[in-house]
Amino acid sequence: MARGELPDYPWDLMVPFRERAALHPDGVVDLSIGSPVDPTPALVRTALANATDAHAYPQTIGTDELRSAIIDWFARRRGVTGLTSANVLPTVGSKELVALLPFLLGLGEGDVVVHPRAAYPSYEMGAVLVGATAMASDDPAEWPAETKLVWLNSPGNPDGRVLTIDELRTARERALELDAIIVGDECYAELGWEGEWADAPAPSLLDPRVVGESRHQVLVAYSLSKQSNMAGYRTAFIAGCAAVIGRITTVRKHAGLMLPQPLQAAMIAALRDDVHVAEQKERYRARRDLLKPALEAAGFRIDRSEAGLYLWATEGRAAWESIGRLADLGIVAGPGIFYGPHHPEHVRLSLTATDERISAASERLRAAAPA
Image (cartoon, rainbow, N blue to C red; front, side, top):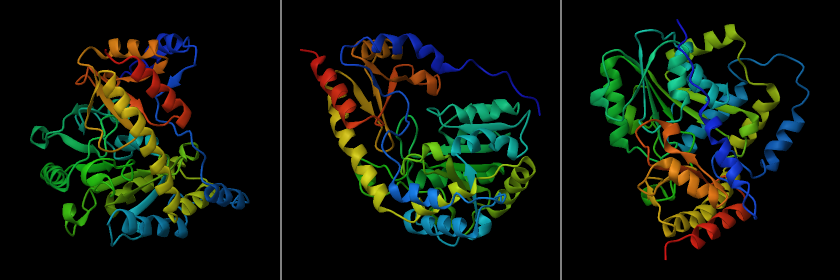
C-alpha cells in the first residue's frame, strides 16, 4: 500500500482571518471548530478518578462491562437490539478510526472509498494514506464497481443533513451489490433540532428497518465527544458486523491500539446516564435559537442543519468573502471548501461556544443586518 501525497493543512489558511477577528474591541468569537466548551459531567470525572489504579494492560476489545454498556446504549438510544460482545469495539476517538479504517481493512491502490459530497476531511485522508481513491458522492447509483468502503455521515458534518430510513436502506443495498463495507458515522445522532428529529435521535444505519436481520459488512461509528463533552477523553466505539469487527480487532491488537482502562470506566458512566445528554442538548438548542435567526437577519440563508452542532450558511457569494465579513465582526467561521469543492459559497458555524460568546456573535450579526 502506497501512501499518497498529503495536502497542506487547510486551517493554516485561516490565520489572517483569525488575526483580523481578534482586532474586534469585544474580542473574538470562534465558531470555526466544534470543540466542546462546557464541563465534562461530574459523574464521568468521578468514574475516571476512581479508576486510576490501572496497573495492568487494558484489552483491545475493552472490558466486559464496557461492551455491555455499549450494547445496552444501542438498544436504549438507537433502537438497535441483538448485539453481542462480538459486535462492538471501543476505539481511541472516532477521528483515529475514520482515518485508519482503510488501513485496518487492507485497502490500497485501485480501491475506491466513497464519502459524502459535504464531508469531514478525514474520510478522504483515510483513503489518501493508503493510496486508495476517494470519491465524493451522495448518489449510490454513481458508486463504481471498485468501491470497497462507503462512509455515510448522518447527521452530517458540516451540513447537518439527516438521512432517512429509506435513504439509509438504499445506500446499504447498493453497498451489498458492490460487496463493499458501509459505515455510518453517527456522532451527532442525539442532537436533532427540526422536524421529526427535534425530539428523537436520527435513525441509525444499524436500525432493523435498514438492515433487516443481517448486519453483514455494516458498521456504525459513535463518539462521546459531543453529547458528553468528552472530546479530550478520546472515547468512541464501533458496532455492527462481527466478521469485520473481528478483522479490525486483530489488526488493532498487533498495532497495540487500545483504550486506557480509566477512560473505559469514564465511558461506562457516560453511556449509562441519559440525563446529562439531554441537559447538554438543551444548552446547544438555546445557543442555536440565538445564532440562527441572527445569521438570517444578517443576510445568510441556512441550508439543511436540521441536526448536529453546526449551521451551514451562505450569503450567495464566495465563502472567503463571507469569512472576511464575519472576521470584521470578530467572528471566526469555517469556509465550505474545507469540506470539499462542491460548496464554495457556504460557511460552517459551530454552536460550541459559551452562552456569552454566542450572545455576542448574535448581537454583532443583528447590528450588521441590512437596513
